[in-house]
Length: 120
Image (cartoon, rainbow, N blue to C red):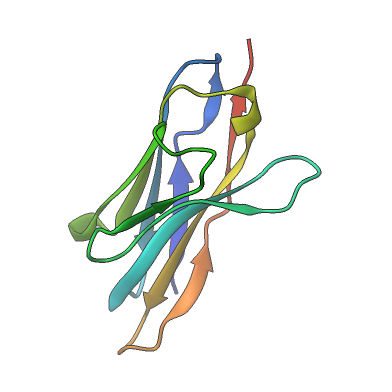
């Protein structure tokens, strides 16, 4: 069974920084894309950033230049470095990964979510 476990959320002042981590564990043969989504109260879940197994990255326009996604393939872990945080970044952040537990049959997995609150 595959699990994604996030950590690193919390309360931060505007302009501050946080680093989120998400580690995949369990039966894993291969991992394709890994990424972060977020859902603010009363809003739909939206893509924040995604990174391919080869290291190519894509960002939402709202976080470009402030957030950086990275991954450690040896640790099956993806990170989200968030700088210059704004109150609009307040949301529950979810980790997502395309994982093949066996062979090359990939499926999407979600973490449980971690809260990020940006407030003075």
